[in-house]
Image (cartoon, rainbow, N blue to C red; front, side, top):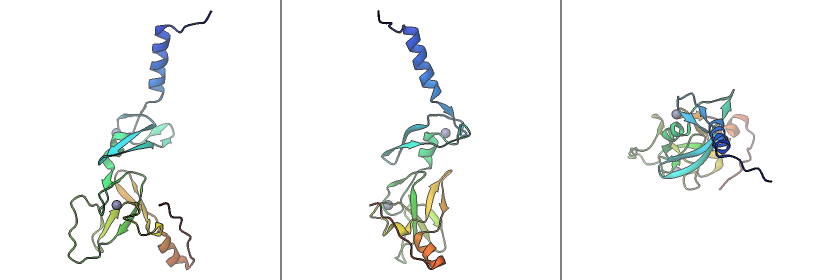
Length: 156
Ligand SMILES: [Zn+2]
Ligand SMILES: [Zn+2]
């Protein structure tokens, strides 16, 4: 005879499964490790890093930290690579949605799509919590410092 799990057993299993996957993130909200982040009309799936059994930010907080690309308005999510181009035109007006990285010279945070990035060598930072640019030298900057050519892998 086959054992059919009882209703309460099933409910308990569901209960355990539900709570085993929830964490209280340091932002104070309940969060799963894997979830969706929606911002500016785009939905992505994100895995938040688990450090010492803790999550720093829930997905809802990560969604609030997303910004829009200065050039194409595409969402830039936490963890995305960014560019810091300067507008060419002298009478350029900073669009309201744009994130200014530096005023002088004017550098705006741009996304990594092929329309906004001339080459992968221009990636020079990552968008990180709580909503700022973490700079790393771009491939061109490394080449300028070391005098060594840098091979750039293009993702597009
Ligand atoms: Zn949160
Ligand atoms: Zn863009």
